[in-house]
Image (cartoon, rainbow, N blue to C red; front, side):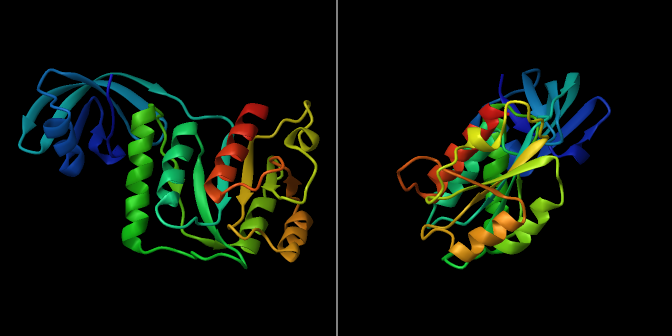
Length: 238
């Protein structure tokens, strides 16, 4: 059944309301009509089986039939350098699909892209929402504004229940080496560097903050490839 995002403020009791671009999509692109059943979610973990009651131009009202709540216990936060061109949009989409909780771009000494405008930020949020709807998750992957790499490491170090990993081409230890079977982490922070890689001073600082460097194999990977590979490994390891 199709799955659509509805702002939490537009879900009240047993009723929901959709307007604007999302309503246009449901009505004119997906061609839904009154009495049709759909799935909606609020991005906070709540999913609802619902029914459309009325359509008025680009406005939809309906009723909630049943609800469920699901948020992953193990949360993965990706801190990543911004790849060139449209590759960051692709990365946002895929990370939302595989279940990451949030992405924070980081500025490193070799970063080329160091931030983005408000308009781009809003576009990235829409991509995350659309990907979340497409894959049927009930939460939305959060997009944050960029941070300096060292500040990102400091933030990650504050929660000892999370494992912090950083793929590095000069490391030989694997994820299996730094996460024993008996480990019981509540989540993970993953750090991905720019195309030129992290500088040695940055690696040493990360290690001093408790970040584990690991290998992803012999090949040098693109930013977005490394991010997906590391995320899938940690999601399947813990």
